[in-house]
Image (cartoon, rainbow, N blue to C red; front, side, top):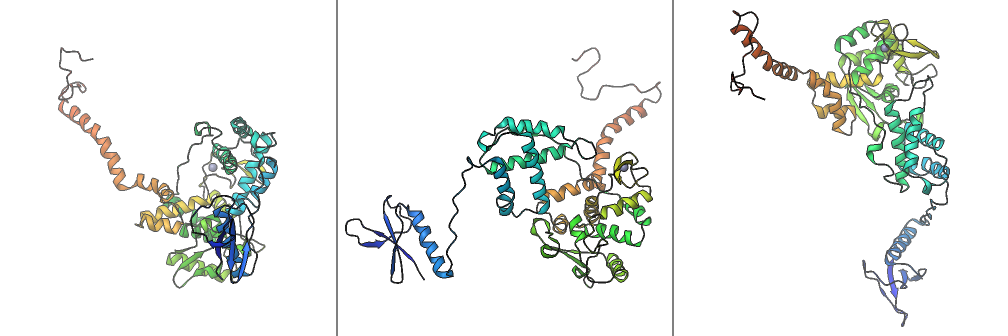
Length: 426
Ligand SMILES: [Zn+2]
């Protein structure tokens, strides 16, 4: 039913239709008309509020339900920081942005650490010095193995706390120049011969894991949540999508993807399905849940294949051990298999937009970072680097060949130079 907004004239008490978009003076009485009903709105509304009341009434009449009244905003000044943080992580920003479990964990930890470093009670008391103290505090923190937390983690914690403060109107407390700094790591990928050696040292089940990640370029979670029904053996495609109900897992950026796989990988997976029948997960753990430790498979095989770096130390069964004797080498990262997948695709002529789409990157910049090394090692780029080097070399060659009768090369001034004999040029 249509609802019309009227204004009531003070003297005559006659109603006339309100002109849309017109601002009537404060104190104007607004009336809604629907069917034969006239409803006077509460006093002291402005034109916008009256229009909202009209629309709300239409919704109520249409749905039969009372429209949700906007909740009065809690005053940030009277709520403690702890309460504000709690709201932020539950019904506030976390709900608004539909944070994934991992994101929520990151924010929760960052804000917890911030509360440890800051003794103030209310938001309005927070200033730049609290963020400076927080930065110093983060640098003193150690990981469970006694190492200092790395610069990137310090930055992330700091950034998350700044986002919280920004959301509550506390902006620009410290200039960007005072933010924690970190060195951006270059994306690396594994070589073809390294991958080949790794595969040779894997048993059938291990090889399934390795070849799967190398053959689809999935993120860790995407791989661990693949079920047999997601694989289309006929068209040789794998579908990745959120599995909230079953596993509480969501694909990043809420974007489903379908990836083509090689004929050989399809055959390998089919063989795996024969060994592990059923329609559940392709890589389950012993309890039938997604195996969250697939990286261990790679680390185990890498040690066996003698592919560890031999210089790093990791934790194995709660002990600090060298990678030369234990499957702990930091060189082996599941995500690097994804970068390797992208590199091999590029090397085989796949276009950057295709690679971007298959990786599920929302930004082309990320994909290009993955492929930077490939550009550096490309035949064309190698030729350029060698050509640049040859520019100097060619002159050395000229000197040595034209003065072979002398004892050693005589350095002549370059042609066109002002350094003519007798004239000292400074
Ligand atoms: Zn190592």
